[in-house]
Image 1 (spheres, helix red, strand yellow):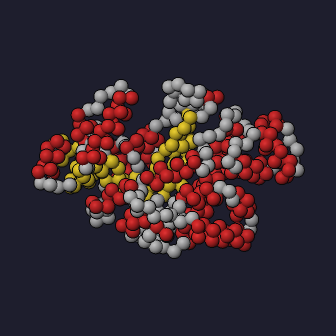
Image 2 (cartoon, one colour):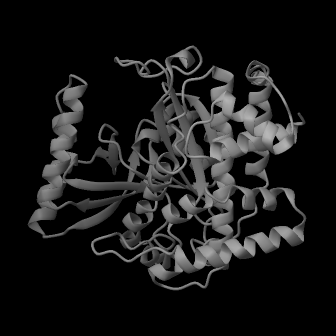
Image 3 (cartoon, one colour):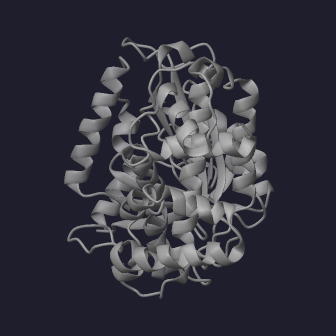
Length: 412
């Protein structure tokens, strides 16, 4: 059994909706390739070397992506990459707890958990980072560990879990840019004095101002930033308060007075100047971060990355990496199709991520032909996929939904 046959077996196995037992895999090897092997012998092939093999394939795939610009060359053209990063965590079988420690707290699998850190470039759709770690490693630790990865003129957009003024300072030193919400416990100084948000709230309410911005210094590092300040509607504030109180109650804490006060504001910090990023575009730009949440939802609903059955650790991690490889290849094909579609300022010009992922998952042999065949056959297969996806898999317009396309054209 050669490495390419072994890889194709795994790749096919994870493309199926059901979990694949060893019995199914050995049957498929015999029927497809004429290879006769016992279940035990196949199971013995799943070692640390196997994990390293598929991980190397994953890393090489990330380094040699082929997608073009997704939307248009003018989209956020002031920046090199627009780096959007988030993580997803899920419980795994308890036999993985030694190397993949979970949060604990009861249940058969709560002591074992996996975290996937995923970063992509909003401009091109390319994967910038895909890392599998134990669940107890938090986002702020990841931010500190990867602070050297930024390049000049990158724009970094992340949620509060990654917030660290030392990392923001590192971004500045790299001549890169950031856009982030402001954490409630971070000190904010203006002209040598701490900003009094209670006083600011009264002034904005009195003057009937819904938003403003200030040049301030934040944190012990005194990082210079533009602080965007926007008042939220009363209903939004009440919902935020209820949610935050529930979160603090679970931790056995009471919500701090300052935290409750700051829930009345939308607070964003950035080092991008107003010419490149006007105040009215700050929130629309930050909303693009929700695209990564949609990616995770599809990875779970379509590719079931969190539902592998119990198996020995090396086999489990191998199958997880193979599933991530399938996701990357699928997304790269989708991105390529998207880049070739006519550009319109409406939903008709954008593919539905969920629809396309669901369809592509069932086109295993076509994807395999693209990977294995010569250029002529690969182009032919891509042409078939292009016609299918561009015709039947576009985003549908829905009322009261964030208009993704309109947001794109704010930045061209």
